[in-house]
Image (cartoon, rainbow, N blue to C red; front, side, top):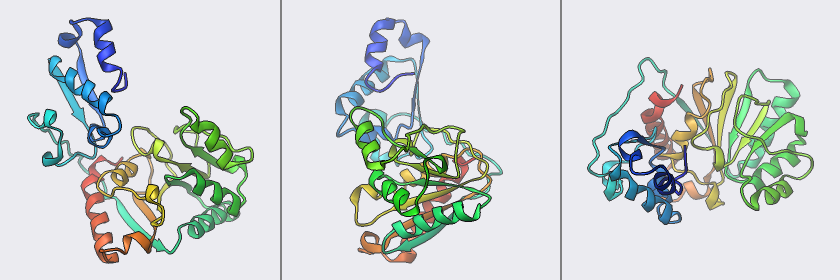
Length: 265
């Protein structure tokens, strides 16, 4: 297992025989397109190695339309895997002027009334998570927070969270309330049969906005064994109201989740 950047170095160390013996498997290949601009060297290095392998597979639960594929992938054949007997993923849209209040209320209700399910919030902002912790008065043992710990971000994120809140990893050790930033939107497995998914988007903050066709569909499959086949998307109306009506946005969201339902378990 290696990062994009490491593939050329791994091939160099392993020698030429690796191209005939090994299968190059690239997971979440849609990231090649999204990462191309700011990880150009890593992506192009991987793509340069790809033709040398006798066997290569690019895999994703959120495939990109062929017209948007990188040139190096255009000629590859496509195989579509459909999971039988999978119940459809339902989407519930909850729009507010600000998503902070409903998230705080959900957390407060979960702790105060002891609801039967666990709450999993996917929101790309440590600042937002910190505000929820403060306003809902959540103790460190009531929440789990998964966010970036790479480089200097760990210290910065700990300062934003404040108090004695720790930064965890996505795994089976869930709590009543769980928060995840983009570091856990893709490529990780969460196990919680009692887990409910909430996606949070603040229309006033650009980094909060999520791509309906890819990111939200990825989030839909993060909890592998949940008994709840639904997602609640809490979002503000400010940015989404520009050029699109609420029914149109709801229809677009439901359409994309319908495409992804076969990948959700």
